[in-house]
Image (cartoon, rainbow, N blue to C red; front, side, top):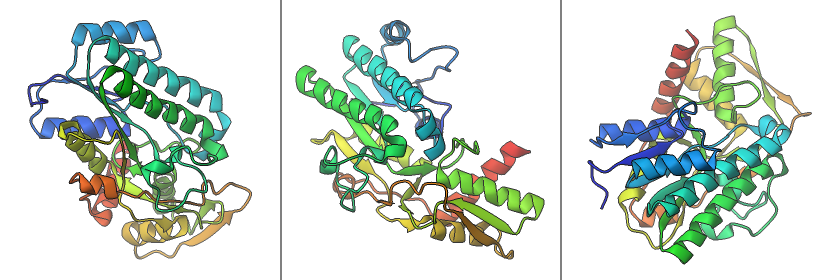
Length: 312
């Protein structure tokens, strides 16, 4: 049983999801949270990962470390995405097994599902169709992680669970112009509108692609919930079950962050839309007793404030 005294290793603790897991664990009284920076531990080095886990012997592992980015980065640096993610996952999962660590949560992504998937997306739709080409290298790496957890559970009787979050946002997000996901990219553009008194915002594609988003603290809450929950299923979707077009998100963000300013939306049709629609079926997570709790307006305001503080 995992208790507040258990040793819990969070990989990727500096990232968006990892940092939220650490915050949530500490706020709930978990006293023995283990974290290592990239300089302290190179997760792509199998020997170093194995030695680290042999030495620390955590009771539970959150595999939140990953190389992540938006459409441009995923499409341009496919080799980096597949190599780094496969290396990190393989090293941690296999080393955990070798060290007798039975409990682990692997964090994937909703992009593991087929591009033209039936909506809302159920867990059983995995590997039933072609992936979105712009991020297929990343998706294949994550699918390999899912199948690895499943295989180790079947062959070695481990308890490795895979949570598939939808598009995630919140404090410590990546706002790089070319490497960020769509929502942090929008937040950065709105910040620049406010700062430089701009009158228009430019979007990639036609703005009609539909996306589901979730606040990172809800993901962290799901991670801790399923850390403690016995489940029959090893693959569970985590999201809100609601989606909107990119155009609608822009309109909502403008209304929340700069309500008194008129801003023209322009579309760059030379850029890709990505997957046309992506909303997760979260009925399985709900059956186990978990559902998201955050308020959209409040979380957008908190995320924007965090971005402003970083820019100052």
